[in-house]
Image 1 (tube, rainbow, N blue to C red):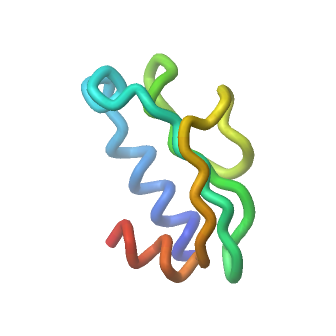
Image 2: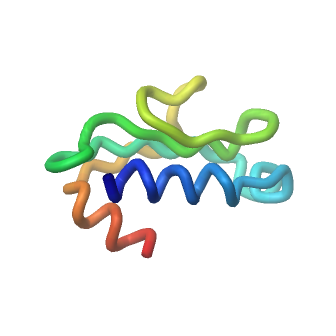
Length: 74
């Protein structure tokens, strides 16, 4: 779905430079189609993004609809 595809694109764009400059972990609590808990880890070596809780404690937790999430990232 659109949420999973958005996270696939984000994962492909994560670089060590983004991780070094950002140093943050973002958790998204999404409602609606493709919802659930998702994350972007721009703190741990290599960075990562995907479904579920982040591998380390989130610095920011955002709750929104999956539709708004996709709009925010496109």
